[in-house]
Length: 205
Image (cartoon, rainbow, N blue to C red):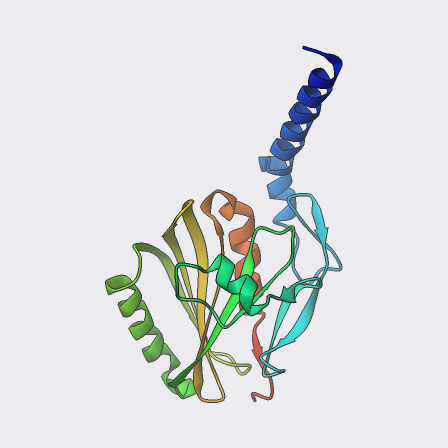
């Protein structure tokens, strides 16, 4: 082994050590005390600042990382090449999750959201890819009723954890999701659930 090979090996070992430390129980436990409403949040040792972002041309707001940007149609098609492409995807280059939104044409008054969400779950369980539902939460809120499904879904490269949510915007059903690799769920599941619950319908009383 020459000097160059040794340097490469040492660098690789250091990277592996750093990656293991970033995902250690100690780091995750400390980071779980953070909130997206704090001035700064660390996600696997990466400092991230959140802000309320206007989405759907200002119809809703969600608290997202400041550098989350809207992906282009071509970028969405490359990632969701198997079909069921969302209309909107927001992400950055270094975090392990993205926000996907579909503002459907299905007319659903706010007071009928919970019934509509039951139908969404029924269709997903019967027709969609194999999924395991872990929990369901219904929230009646003055800023817009919200239904949250927590589930595991089979993906090409493993199993994904997903926070899938439904709400009504201007009388039409809005469906969204934040998903990531199941192995990251201890840190990312609480964080992304907080993001989902930050959703506000602009102008709702």
